[in-house]
Image 1 (cartoon, each protein chain N blue to C red):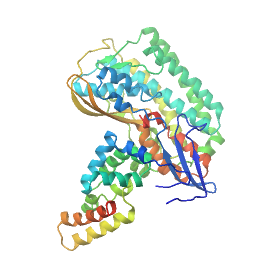
Image 2: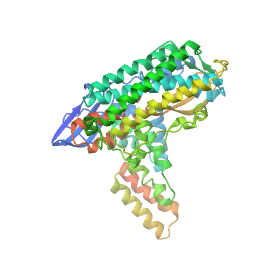
Image 3: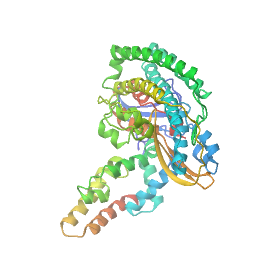
Image 4: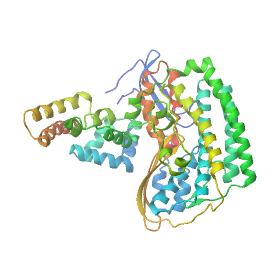
Amino acid sequence: MTEYLYEKDLRPLKYNVIIGKRQDQTVREMAALLGIRIQKLRLLLIERLDMSNLENMPARFEAGLSAMDSKDPIADALGRDLFVRYVQVFTKSEMEAAYARARSLADGGLAHDDAVGEGKAMLREVISP
Amino acid sequence: MKRTVDVAVPLGPVHPCWKEPIRIKCETKGELVYNTEVELGYMKKGIERIMQGRPWQEVMFLAERVCGICSVVHNMVFTETMEAISGIAPPERAALLRVIVNELDRIQSHLIANFSYCYTIEHETIGMYLLNEREHAMDMIEMITGNRVNTAYMIPGGVRYDLQPEDENTLRTTLDLLERNIRRYTQMFEDGPMIGLRSRGVGVLTRDEALEAHAVGPTARASGIDVDMRTSHPTYQKLDFKPIIRTECDNYARIMVRFEEIIQSINLIRKALSMKSDGLVRGGGICQGGEMRYSGEAPRGELTYFVKADRYGRVEEIAIQTPSIMNIDACSHYMLKRARSIADVTSSFISSDPCVACTER
């Protein structure tokens, strides 16, 4: 999010957007996918997304889910495209670090769920250090 | 952390090109705009909250007050949502009358969108011509429904009023006039060198970007995405409806899609008039409880209603996803990023036909 010299505090307005019925449902779904608390995710979203992005978050989330092609199960489970390109929760480098960790563990013989769990743990560190 | 840019240009909330208050903050380097952010919150109505706990008879009137330009489609989608929940189907004549009024509404909405664009790029002559044509469409809506803006024409199980034979003749004559004039103005828009210079290659939204932001309606169709909710509507399927697609992905494509859709709407109305048979326009039925997600095609794109009603038809929960939410996002995060000047920001924004009243419900 860009900060301008003349900027006012938009957090109350953004909070009003994010607790709308559809937005709230989406935040809960995302929190469940990542295994984190809703309030922590809300805070990150308010910090990282602008108001039009927050309004459009449910539609972007649905578009991201439908674009998953199941070619790379680890990428899909971590939401590599979903949480970077569609809903911009994480930066590309944050997601790539988590993906690389999960991928290396899976290639090393760890079970899929455990490897994804390790990747998600890295993502949770970003949200709630 | 405060960040200083070359020049931070705020456009709005009150701006001569905006129909409604919205603020676009542009980060510029020289004339180049390299980042923009949209600030909302100047006209939040809280209409979804007002709807909660009210019976459908009241919510129906509130729904069409979400937007003053495409009020008919809000009325239609809410009504069809209640019908889908309750298992009610309108009689065939009523279904075709709904299509006629909905397409007239699309014509006037597209005309005001293209007027705004022409006005923004300071081609006021075509702009004013288009506004004159819009009056014909508004008059037809008034003739059929009795009102110009908030018509409340559709009700669960049918429509309120029938179309009189003498009105049908007036409608056909007006459609002929509209088609002749719109074709002329479309030609002027296509051939005009100034319009071309300000529109072609400006505000590009690629297909992938449109998919990412879930852009809808003419904004998506101008980026080559074949999406139109009318294709899945049972009445439109009878009318053999095919969406209009362009692939230029720029401002010019978005305006031309709207011009082509106006002609398509005129033909759809003609087809509906010829298919319409005698019969009831109000079939009746009782609204019941249930939960439903239902989408229809508004002039700006996919309009979705999520309604949860109790067994008396009282709306317990409601959420409205309007097309402008997606299109404003696509505009601010992709189209405007490559703007070569601030003047292109206003024209690109208007080319996506933003409706702040819808976005801030």
